[in-house]
Amino acid sequence: MTRQALVEQIRKKKSFLCVGLDTDLHKIPKHLLKEEDPLFAFNKQIIDATIDLCVAYKPNLAFYESLGAKGWESLQKTIEYLPDEIFTIADAKRGDIGNTSTMYARAFFEQMKFDSVTVAPYMGADSVTPFLQFDNKWVILLALTSNPGSHDFQQLTLKNEDEKLYERVLKESSLWGTTENLMYVVGATRAEALLDIRKIIPDHFLLVPGVGAQGGSLKEVAKYGMNDDIGLLVNASRSIIYAGKDQYFAKASRIETHKLQQEMATYL
Image (tube, rainbow, N blue to C red; front, top):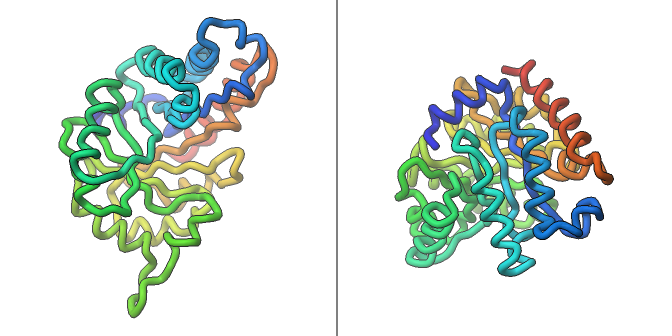
């Protein structure tokens, strides 16, 4: 998907919402376990209930990989079910030496037809650039995450320099791609950091997890992170897909999705 097509969808739907499909067999409603493919049955109902209110879906691959071949089949069926105008994110957090990264890129972009994949930057440029060689495909690079362990490395101040490690990552990696194929993950629980981040990468899209169950503020994310092209995809996972526990779970998910979409509309 091109940047222009993504922006058009955001403006059309008045939404920059991404729904995270972190689908756990232990958390989905029990009646779905009788289905031939419980994960896909769950995902399909979530998608049907929310697709007009969001612009992207982000399956977290761990929830599918953990089930082996059946999980991969559920994932493939989910991606094939989504229409072309929906932006798809493989939340895989890959990153390896160049020839291995090329194989990862082929898997997600050519075989599974994802629009984007999350990538870890800490092996450097040669581990990331193979993902950037595909037309209308995106790398979403981990920059500043919302988990407590982000303090261990990402926020360390570099010796003899007045910048943090994640800021160096942003500066260096922005030279590897363009605003047409490179996005960044910035956690919503770090919303105040968006001001400094936007000084380094004013025009790139940001994927912002942490709104909802993790307590991030959508208002602050929009205030500090939005640019002229909106430049944001805000992800919510558990707060949407597990909003309901019974046979009406999809209806509950739609209610939560609609709340976020309505708030987003006020910021556009």
